[in-house]
Length: 443
Image (cartoon, rainbow, N blue to C red; front, side, top):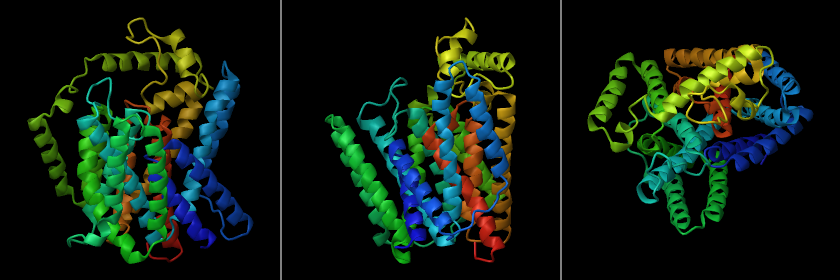
């Protein structure tokens, strides 16, 4: 196995474990970075510029400056280490140029997302995670992280179904991957009920990484058969997992993401999204109806968090409070009417960045967000116009970005490493498509 195929296998394993384990995905990222550096040193690849290089570099430098001027520089610099995750964009960019390898890596994302969503559903219905203060988190540490990842996976799977040229019945031999994943989820659920979740989860994550590597390196026919089954199972499972997660921000985000995919596929299909929403509102499942309000404590607390965040920005508009310093500084800015005395973050991506890194940091963040969205939009429109096989990937990435950024108006979802890593991996797709087209390779 050559270095390039090893790079693809590592990226596929990372893609599958990102919805399951921060530790495993970050370990795989470290190995991927080391391999990328080794390949660059041996001149097996050439690193080329992209439109996001400047905003990413500016954001990183300004974040480190903000950490230097924070009240607790050591704490701020510790939090700023998350900037290393942005290297995933460049790792993925070099590995996703080949169409077949790209689809296998995206299938690995769906495989990990299927496992996460399935465990969330099992937790809600069988393990007692059915209360507002005890919501299903799947393999992750918090239900917000789980719902954010599931939202992205659902939009990606819906795009693959919408743009798939095949209309044949999936072959039975392709069911091996989802069957193994769902069997493993059942075992984890049973062992979790008996108090042995930690060991079971670790074994499952290891198995998922190996399966993803097998998918990335396996024969084309075997991989294609498995890729057909994954979106068919992910869409219903992830949709119900989001309902039972009782997380309103992702509900709005996923609707926007699906609407973007529908418009790119055929504008008239937008009516289908509206019909699904109407059916859900008429059915009014208990997990949904209890959350259709803006007068609850969490909504009120968000309002006062945002007020405190604005005060933080006005007080320190240049360098902000410092990365990771919101929890320590919030009590000084908290409004008396706020229900909760502490807030680890401000439940809004833009406001969080501005409060931590000042207005210049917000400008660099918005510059990056605009650059990746524009690249995804350009590739989605181009792929659709020429009916390229890459239409599903390009439309899926644009839909995911729309969902994440909209949900990020009421959640600090990019503060979750799981969501951030998934976004960084996917944002490399449109740039890889552009490079393949420029090099004359089939997209």
